[in-house]
Length: 340
Image 1 (cartoon, rainbow, N blue to C red):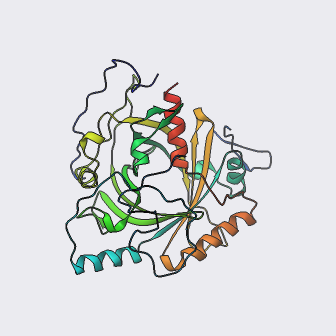
Image 2 (tube, one colour):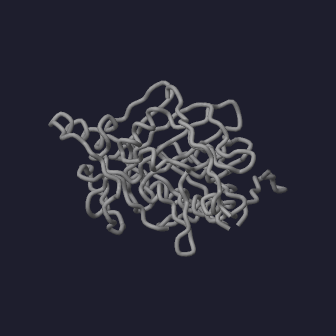
Image 3 (cartoon, one colour):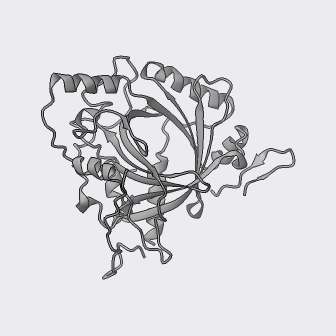
């Protein structure tokens, strides 16, 4: 029984949590042999009316309209001061020049085959464990994820070597035109980075704003299985508070994980842009995903997406035109397992 369903159960103490500053084997032929077992709509942050890419700022370059269903206005309200012409011009420049991250996902039984085809050796990859936080609750025989449904992702990636961990808060989907004051342009400090970019997955295009902080983070769960709370930095708390996710929305969060992650930088001869490959496994739930992604400027995005998909299909990979969200699928499976 999950901690949030336990009648009269004591919840973990809520601390301030602020931080200053922010085995696979081989076959006889030598090929890597992987042994891998085996959505509700999102209310976008600050989106007005029917959903559309980029809110009131759209790219000048034409592209196919996203195959998406209009969704209700977000319940998250942002109170922003009126902007001057200079503010609007700066925001338009940010949106028109933002990077595009293009993602292609292979899942299920096709994952192991794809790893072998691309010669992704786990010994050569970067190993991490991934955890998320939300406030799961039962709903009509399933589970709801309120923060994810309202467009907020809180993610921790812990490394297995000497590299720093990172904790990210991400508003996705979001309308860049309605981001909070002080968080409308990309910015970077020694231990954190704020980005605004577009995510393309198949025909789905959404804007995302993320604040990633590097550091040495504690374990997300205690030895007795209780959830620790995310160690948000002052900057992350400021962003979330201004975006409508105040302390009342972030109390008694439940850690969902672990998810095993291995990341590579493979060399694919036909691609112009560097590609990143990341394998996710949720062993207890029999889930596996291989995501391949490239980053590009807006002018090259359509051609880069077409080239990436064609290159993978030419190698025999089964790429879906309507890929599932690996984040939502993994979080839902983990939350459902806790409710049993």
